[in-house]
Length: 198
Image 1 (cartoon, rainbow, N blue to C red):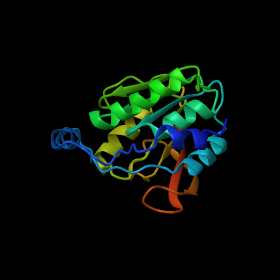
Image 2: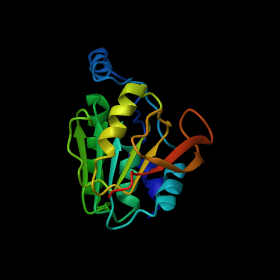
Image 3: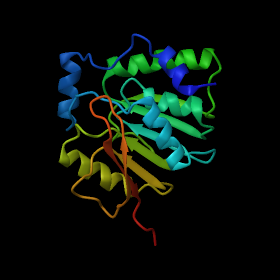
Image 4: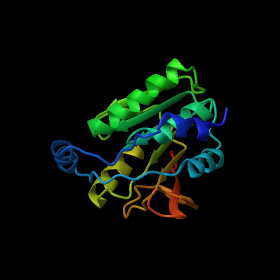
């Protein structure tokens, strides 16, 4: 199965660029920005291969939008668990519709694929081995809080962000990839190793 072609079919006429004003306000009150963008599917495929995602991995996408990144991971890789967390209900609902189709068509390679609607700073993710975020719209205070939270995850082996935060809380940049996004070709994608655990 070609995961990119399947993704294109599943998301035909679906996008994450519409928001309700009340949802935009809720996102701002949580300390974020409702602007939308995504990693392109060919770039996501390159990232999955670079990260060596496999059966032991639990992948979280913080601010998962309409779920394209996590849906592609769940149908392309035999992961233990894939979780997308999105605060905007309209985007989350689109992701859930696609997940329903993925399950009906038996397309999952991952053991489990879940979508949560809520604030990723308040939801559990202790089992995460890989965390990704398309964080370009996240303000620095949110990035600092997120990095502090991620630094405490016991199973984390890497964190991937489209923004290089000012405060790293012990994380170290191990690579900067150049991958295509919906707003820019060859955008920097930062790969971090978690703090050394003693």
